[in-house]
Amino acid sequence: MGPLSSPATTVIPGTDNEMLLARAIALRVLAYFDVFSHPLKIDEILRFADDGPQCAELIERALGELSDHGIVQQHASYWGLSDIRTKVDRRIASERRAVARMPKAHGMSRRIARFPFVRAVFISGSMSKGCLAEDGDIDFFVVTTPGRLWVTRTLLVMYKKIFLLNSRRDFCVNYFLDTEHLTVEDRNRFTATEVVTLMPMYGNGTTEAFFERNAWAFGMYPAAPQPKSREVPIGNGRTKGLMERLLGGRIGTVLDQWAMQLTWYYWKRKFSGMDVRSFEIALRTRTYVSKHHPRNFQKLVMDGYEKRMSMLEQRLGVPLS
Image 1 (cartoon, rainbow, N blue to C red):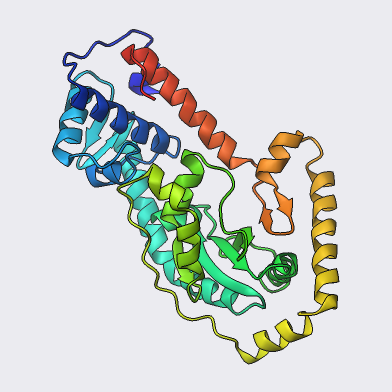
Image 2 (image 1 turned 90 degrees about the horizontal axis):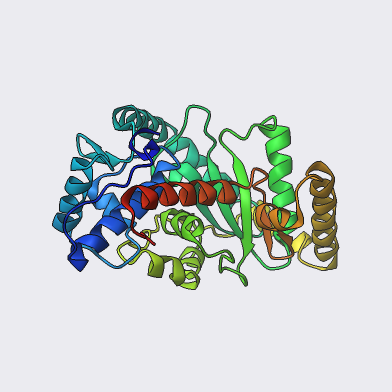
């Protein structure tokens, strides 16, 4: 893993509190994004600084010192922990793919917004950060009316299976909340990063309410601006309005409960080897939330981050948390 692979402790001169804090902040941010092999520019490091706004000049000085001692690397205007040139090339290529696929993401957002009981649509995942891997999917985060989340999810999944031939490439709906439960339950660096980078697309004010209810994420990243909404009003199209009236009564309630139970039993069988704690985090199944992350990506990322932080602390001989 490049400079992180050496067990020897590196002592960097300079003990003033400002510089020590700047080093720690920069390394925490770089360690997190290194899990994704994603190098960062100075302004991006500042955006994801978790200890209050920092001076760009101070962060740059700290990075320069760390670079002089082989802890971090620089290429062009990007910074990373290791293999920087290769990672910069990959990032640039992934940004080009994201730009090319963004019109498709906008179109799919509009399509999702037309489904009954949908009240907000966000682009999430790597696309919300302006990047897309060669085999990457376009991820969406959807907010529904209370008591109809599972009906909505089932209709969207059926649409994907029937009309998109079950392709996830342009239509991956893996996280749902309802308007009465907008707060993301897990609170850590991973979920905070996902919240502050969401791209609001449609919502009639629901997207703004979501960000207000998740102010904790912006508290973790004080310099991260609240995403600007480009949302177009969802409205009540004729078909959407008719479906909501048809499924708005008891039949809709029964169908929603049935859809949730059926999905839960299916996931329990399919992922029977997953322990209870992992299942709860990766496949959260409640009346007001549906989360489908069978690889438990959150745990993979946080484990990778903790490993990098441990190696950096061992290398520097000082705590960075």
